[in-house]
Image 1 (cartoon, rainbow over the protein chains, first blue to last red):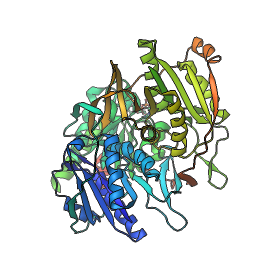
Image 2 (tube, chains in turn red, green):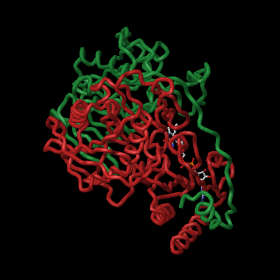
Image 3 (cartoon, helix red, strand yellow):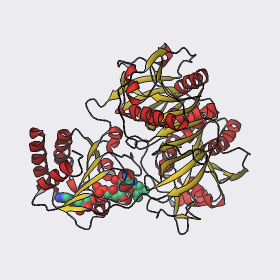
Image 4 (spheres, protein in one colour):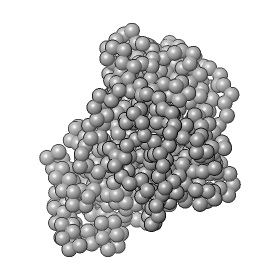
Length: 321
Length: 247
Ligand SMILES: Cc1cc2nc3c(=O)[nH]c(=O)nc-3n(C[C@H](O)[C@H](O)[C@H](O)COP(=O)(O)OP(=O)(O)OC[C@H]3O[C@@H](n4cnc5c(N)ncnc54)[C@H](O)[C@@H]3O)c2cc1C
């Protein structure tokens, strides 16, 4: 019996959310008295033995011509075969777009109960119970998995990376695969940008910024902080910003270390997507804005006056450090 | 072409989230129920748009739920579904729900199955992918655009840090999100017509639950906001650096 962690990669580079999943798998393995192994699918530019730093003992690398492009059906079939060959009982994913596309498929194939969006390690004192985020971050549910095999997908940014100094053994694994029925016509990467779901810091703007021409206040600060940018729904609806920046109940749900909201009222549907952020900063000219109730730090003031000063202060801080 | 749209009933986005029976159940008293926004705004409306472009398309709706789901099923019919099925069960386990829908889909042989990318209550993001496994069909998740090109579908889907354009032959399963379509409200004609559209109740098959809800909990309350004067925004930067240690 062993724990298998799916390591997601993008263009040959391992994702931060994969390291989180690896650490989660390693901690779970400790609780269960076993070891955590990893599976990497497709060509990879990185040295996979580094996964030892995240608690992985052994990496199974699977490459073949059918696996050059991600396809939920093909990948889940391959992971299913790998689970059988390795004897994996518990499979861990990151709950990112890839994990969401494969985890539930694998659940059916392995006849393994799935908890998606886990925010804490499993509790084994009375069954196998995993805490997950529900109601778009407004609450948690403790879910019991009733099946022998189990799948957990971990919410990005909700489990901290604990880096040690170890090397994993890497070997290639031969399992049969099928060819994809999905033809990829194009891949359009927003290069240079930090993926919003993985970002440690997010700077976000709302209707209070009045128009797309003022977004420099958000993007300049984001650039200085190495942050991703986000926006409220009406801002994306009127195309001031692209749809993929829309956070909230009907957009992306994120949980960065720091979320800075500029000119956003903090409607309940917006909060639903950002309330798992560890520190929330609100800049709004209306002291009654509901966002202040959910904030850790705030400035009641005009963003057009406050933001340039914040940007200056961050520049100064960065030049000192 | 036959399209199946999966419709889930969720609490309204402004509903108060609280729990009853020793935190084992969602406190539904006084809660307004809606069609899960991803199912309605994106999956269903896109299906309706496809039908408007090609009247030979028929749209079936399926909900796994009890009789109290019928108002939202009628609303989906009013928006433009042709026929609806309610599988009579109170499912909270994704595998249970997906298996019920798969039974219907096996019988009806749909060309296309749409789900929302997730529900706003359980945030499971599972039904579409599970259906694709149960039916052994290709699955395209997080679709932001969907068009028909002859015998194939051309789909834009979100990936981490960008988008991908896929082309897939029918039949397939697609999970839908923002970008697919614009929100609509049903018109009078739709509402009147929905009353007589077929809504068939099917008894649920006996299927075991892979998971069960043990309890719910609310997140710990915030300590309260620390306000910095608008005259000294640099103080905020200092606090974020020295106190919160986040920059
Ligand atoms: C079913 C449903 C789902 C929804 N889903 C989402 C979702 O996923 N995400 C989302 O964001 N919204 C969502 N909404 C919309 C949500 O209810 C709010 O309407 C929206 O979040 C408001 O966006 P906003 O804060 O940018 O704009 P407003 O509400 O217009 O707020 C603008 C804010 O800017 C402040 N302001 C104005 N000028 C300045 C200035 N010069 N300096 C500083 N502050 C200033 C104002 O005081 C105000 O608080 C949803 C709504 C519904 C009904």
